[in-house]
Image 1: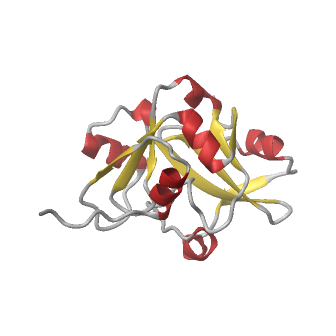
Image 2: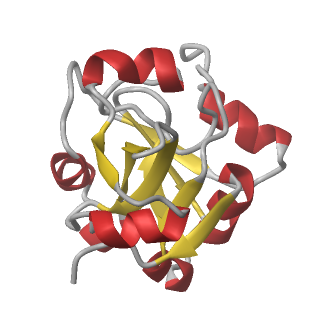
Length: 161
């Protein structure tokens, strides 16, 4: 018998919402970026998305889910969430206490608190996408509209051209 399946908070939320998904675990001892992960698993880069947790000028936090090769456009992102400005990611030392996830394992699903979440609008055109499964060494594959539903997200253009 193989080892017991370990469910992450993201997976439990998907199960509760009766969302169809698959996951893949891979060897990973510490942080690797999305590009390295996609290459390791043989995934098309266009299907793999990273999760960025940012802070607005008001102090509120926002989650952006963008393609691994893309860069966030902070002006567009701020406009979408109704802030004057949005600044870089939450500091690594604060990520776990804020989201319940660590760097490299931060999923847009199942954070400690529901933050306003925005998925790059191009994802709507995909049949499926990959996002972090909620721990290092795990990727979840699901339909973009299912991610939108479970993460209570909206689609918008938030990346640099």
